[in-house]
Image (tube, rainbow, N blue to C red):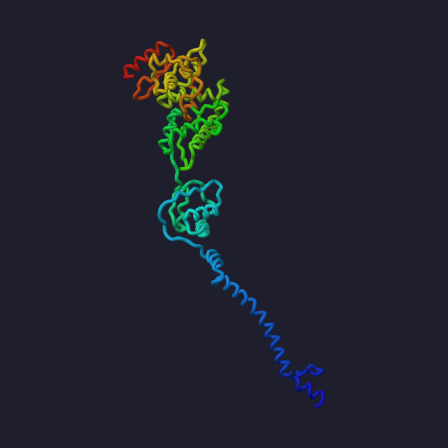
Length: 383
């Protein structure tokens, strides 16, 4: 057989590119090479599956937990049981709140809570405060409970004209904290950030208003908030500029406002009472203020009707005894009294008498004779 016949039998190509026959060994070698190339394409996904199976399988238990939590985080069902108070602190992130809830046993996992607030579009609306929740709540229920309306707050209402000691008693009554803790906190005047013109005296600068305190708010923090509220009122009233225009210090104005607050039975009489005080202070020769309310403060008593014997008390707060204003406020005045002290009515009155204790009507007089007539009217009405 010649060379041409042999090449034809082997399946080789001729010089023109015609197909030639291959030997069996050559065919088997080609199939093995194709199998090796195909095996590479199949091996990559197979290897990935084996690795994943290894993670999920008995040798990868912790990997399974991680994967399971990432896909479907642990969560409780229902509203939960028991009670737990959670505090969201100022500046806490949603993830920090979620971790706290998980640690306290409120939710099954922080991830479930993050998902719940994300679904409810609440991620950026968690407000600082204390909230009453339950143990083992569903994440959705916990998220629904953490809204501002559900914050635990102690509402404290302080009326105008309370003395500092009365303020402490009211704070204790309405918050459940001991009055002695408020008295102790009041001694740390630096921490309360009093205005410089207060001269370190807290009386007069604990502003009467309605406050909402969180359960963990300390007495010192409460008093500091009330002083801050005073500063807001002082700024709104333009206290410092107004005092300067009247030739007095801001502290003088608060002392005058505190006397007005104690003496006035009605808001509409406050500006006239303030005028009486200024007229007495500015009178030539000087005239003592002779305000019964200051005498009662000196004695630790209440009311605005001092006896003749009580007016003889030698005390810096007794304005029957000392000239000018007492050294400090005798009450914590409100907006109206401060406004009256800054804007006294026009008039030349030197006296006033609450002629009818039942209606709190106050009448004013210029002369001592008129004043005596008002006293007689007061006595006739049972005063």
